[in-house]
Image (cartoon, rainbow, N blue to C red; front, side, top):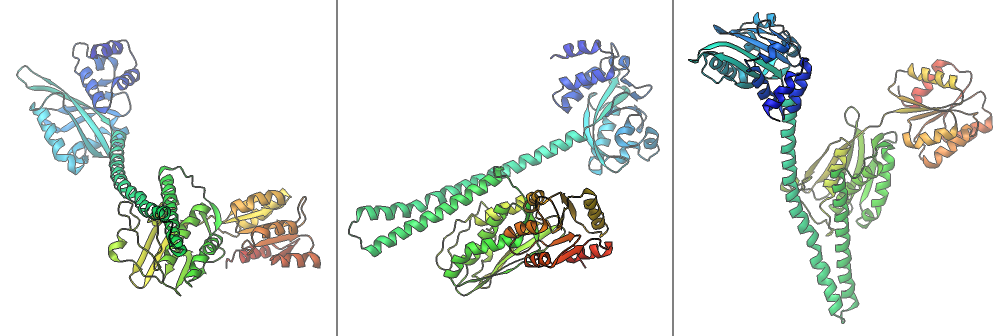
Length: 543
């Protein structure tokens, strides 16, 4: 749309906000908006802006948000008049600014001060063009930096003498912030593309290299019918190991790629860390036994984390596999966990292996410098395992680091979010559930309370939420307390979840059944409130 077309639309408008909206509609960006603003400001024949009441250099007013009007004193560039709207942008009134030494210029960012002062001087003296636009930073009353775009409107005599000078300024802080973010994103994308190119070069080599041995040994098996059984089995073993290594590499590569692109959905839930570690140690036992390596676990059964169970397990498996691979026979591997910092659990996998040289340590966790080393018995790896571990930990908002010394071994650490503590109340009477909840609140402990009205409802919550404590009534419809605990213990074989049972009466037979199921606390109604809260704290191991 031509300037004349836009102007004709403007002439038909009476509302200043409509005019502003149309200006913004036809402007491609902040710069072109300023150009349009200047064009209409300089229209002297119809005194366009003043006739619409948008800007008034005499009355110093500006009627829409995000802009203010400035009138300059030609005798003193530091002496200016501002429209009232400047207060909405900078927090200062015109009077407050004029009371400051240096006026508005005293709030200009130090890195922009000289260029702003230089431009102000040139525009007032007529040394610069009359439609100058400058952008600079100003410190607001709340000491926040605001980006200002200022466009000048200067009237001159025929010989170039300045007769009046005004400017329109608008707050472009959001625009500049977006621009900065876009520039940062562009740099990140460029860096990612560079890394990707390097990675593709490495991957293409790794994808090709195993086929040399696969094709070579398979051709020998095809073309040499007189091979001995020993030779034939040896060549088949080479092919098998090469294929297994390549499959592991491709699986790691696919998982890493899917995590990077968001195609694998992280599904964190409250899980028992010892259960996950124990399961993954069991899977690694065969490899450990072949080298007579002992794996020790030092993890408290009451540590719960918020994690994707499968992915967390994969991280542990990768670290365990490396620890076994790079350990000599008869060595020890230790897997432990402790509270790290607020809301995080630290997991440690430590071995007594061959260690990693300082040169190779710099290559770990980097996709552009792949590090592959054979194990103490010639075991091969994909070289992608540690990258996958880091990607998984990053997606759980954790950190991963390591210590290693040649000849002494390595220890890898990573952090994972600690799960929120939960208490489950199972009671069919709503009022009693509210009473228990109030008593728990009186304990002043940082636990979230969830509720269930019967055993079946409770079971649907127990293994999704994994509560730290279950408080249940014995006499309930559909499923009584004993049946509920029996169902829980079928999956919770280590009795990791403590259970407190409340009932009006326990006979000896019922008590014996609960004891067999690992229930230590049975509370008979009516009970003392202090006794109840003491039992809660005792079950949660809170002193």
